[in-house]
Length: 341
Image (cartoon, rainbow, N blue to C red; front, side, top):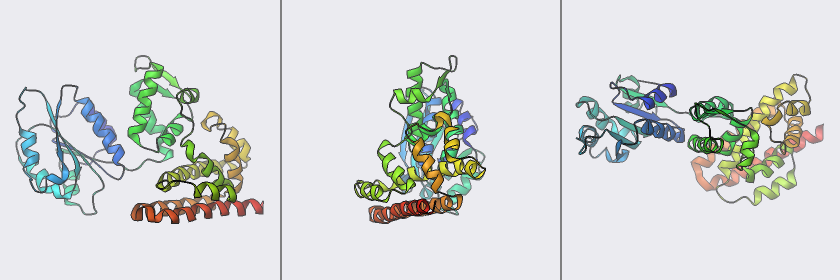
């Protein structure tokens, strides 16, 4: 049956007897792997894990049922984990469901094709818990990081979720590892909760995000054509996706703040009103950018960035030049807006 993150969290605490298979899938594979780690940890330190590759189940559909119904040599509880499950495993999953009860099965998959028979089965079968994970955005940071932090005894101050989200590039596994590190640093626990603030992030080296991308993002959003041309030209291969995603998060931030500017506040007042949520070194940059980008311009830029990211994913490094062209075009748009002021 279709389920959500809350149900998966409950399964991680206590796997129900009526659930044969937990299927974690969707475009955010990092989130699925993170959930899988939590489910595995919830079974306890003594659990024995049998790992199967999803692509091996096509040639041996009985392998999944055999692993799930095998007897443990030592009588310990076992978990069968399948990574890379895809539609070729339909027969294997059907055999599992038709077979006798056995060890729990945890499967991680990417995105299924439209009309997938395996996904249709998983979404409807009562003994399958199927959870789809979409890529989170900066707007989700507060809820997402808050949910991760609570079991560690951490209470996140304003601006901290966004800073951690950006520094991790939205990768949930990285965010969880960072929070675990800060829980040790603060000596926090559910019984002894601690506040996590911007000063704590700075103490362990986290500021607002990708430090190496700060300069090009600043140049692009403020219309500094000469600086942007130089910085973009010196970026190493493979930087297109991280830079586009960091820029997307910056434009999403500007979109939220621009609403207040359009309501009558000055860019400086809006930025200062955010307090520690905006790193002090970035405040002048964001103030200037807010004065240059209107809501329609921001919406157009976001659409172009998403299209460029899709092109890079589809074509690999050959699309890096196209991404660089867009980055310079965005810089020129900001420069033109500056000349019109």
